[in-house]
Image 1 (cartoon, rainbow, N blue to C red):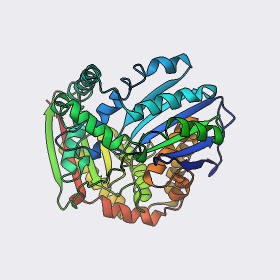
Image 2 (image 1 turned 45 degrees about the vertical axis):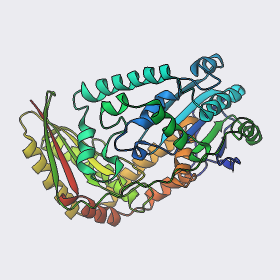
Image 3 (image 1 turned 90 degrees about the horizontal axis):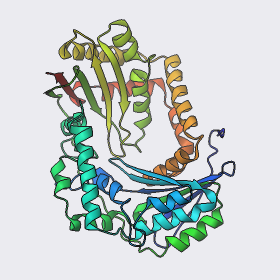
Image 4 (image 1 turned 180 degrees about the horizontal axis):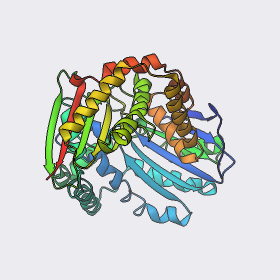
Length: 419
């Protein structure tokens, strides 16, 4: 069943347990299911440069059983529930969807693994092998799989965004000890470093009772203090050429941009849409359709909490060299920066963005995640404010942002050549 959500109508209530766990409740009695979403304020940016990939490893370890529950999936499947998780450079998110009458099962499962993992050596070895295999399949043995290893290292010289979520290298996971694992868990997987959103066919008082019963006895821990190096301002173009056995040449370019909470974030977001979102975008119309320099070309942003990247990815057409493609793209970007943005083009991308946001609110799980995401950023009501933030961006602001961001000195370029 699709629920039509009107702008600004995602309602929630919140409370905080004595141990610091923030809980948000979004009631929607039009559906029969419930979601329990727990987001931890930890990602790969929080890792030791010599021990990377731990946030992602924990995404796997958290399903390996806890002190009182040796099998996480079995009891959840018995009550008709499903679960999953994901890790990013900024957060780690776990979620359960199940029939609302079985809500307490989710509280029981999530609270026990927040209380303590089993720290079983066999479980660590099993998940270590899983992560290493994933690393090999997705990042080593897959064409272009190591692209972001190269790009992040090229673009970032100080900040811990310089490695991808999977980690810098396999050896960091191979060498992870049980003491390393325990230290990471006790530092980051604590109530004071987490946000829980309970959404769907639930009631506030019921959630309060369950939260106090299952989560409040867990020791709060201490909210970790971040000391991530600030990325220095890039002052010259950077370029890297890689040659591998891949099907065709690919061009990758990234420019530094604002972090998620900065005022200029939304103008850069819309700038990327104008340039490379869909077949009506500037890049596609000029360099794919008209001049046929690329067979595919897109622009997007990383959406990072700390200063992130505006990215462009181009798949070259037959007979076009990387140097030619890069020059053509550079010329087009200079023309774009010198030309005023039309209100018609801006309205089109705003409508596209607004549709995506509205569509994302039709299902209960994305709503729960959005509330949690905003809460970690410091504003749980972001889910209701983002459309207006985008709508308020002017064509002049985007034009100025293009001149500021799309400078050669702010750009890192990767030529990925086919041998």
